[in-house]
Each structure stands twice: as C-alpha cells, then as structure tokens.
Image 1 (cartoon, helix red, strand yellow):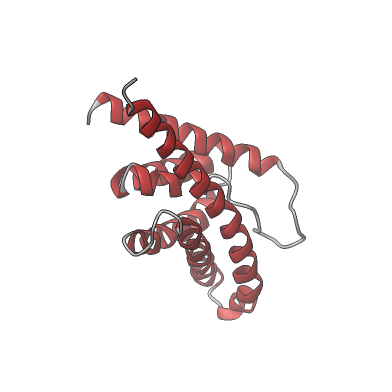
Image 2 (cartoon, rainbow, N blue to C red):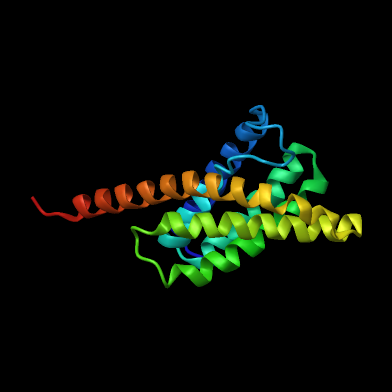
Length: 171
C-alpha cells in the first residue's frame, strides 16, 4: 500500500471515528432507540465516491470495529457491522448509476439498507420477527437522516473536487 494512500485512509478513519464518538455523546434527537444521525457516514460516502470501494470499505470496517471497542459496546458491533455492510453493498451498486449531484440518493437508500441490516441482526439475536414492527419508524428516520448526511457528503465531494481543480490550474 502506498504511504500516501495509507495516510489518507488513516485520516479518514480518524475523522469518522471522532465524529462517531462525539455523536455518541449527543442526547437522542427522538425517544426512538437506536435512532441517530449517523454523521460518520458522511466520511464513508465521500470516500466511496472519491477514494474508491476498497478504501471506503476499509475505512468503514475500521471505524465500526474501533468505535465499538472505544465505546465499550461490543453488542453494537453486531448491529453496526450488519447494517454497515448491507448499506455499503447497496451504495456500491448505486455508485455506478448516479451522478455526483445524486450522491444524496445513495445515502438515503443506504441508510434504509443499514436499518434493514440492523433489523436482521435484531431478529437473529431476539429469535423473533416482532422487531420488524419497528421497520416503518426506522425507514422514516433513515430517509431523513440519510438525506441530511447524503447532502453533506455531496457538498463535501463537490467542494473538494472544485478545490482540487483550482489547485491544478496553472497561473
């Protein structure tokens, strides 16, 4: 792995992990268990569109593993990993179908896939399908939070792309 690439991935992981840890300290926006903005996903979505799928996957997995370890919540590892992987796989498929002005759509559908992954994990843990009654609430919250994080990732992507283009201009 080239040093520059490794440093870029480490920085992205550190940023995502920091955002994750700060967000974990913010009180819940609604009295709905497990509902949060998922701000660290801004880094993952940006990385998927900028750095590519392999680097984005490594950043995501590293953030999930370290976040679960640092937060002391190993049970969240199961839910985060199942949701994160399903979200990533869907985002990977959608990546080739959308333009850079539709990144927010990938984030919304990815957030919904993340919730499906979490519900599948909860079904396995609880050995019951009753958790799926919670699906409509999670889909609505996933749509709203996915739109927010997706718009933020899209703005970040477009602005950094513009900065890179400006940096390449010759005086």
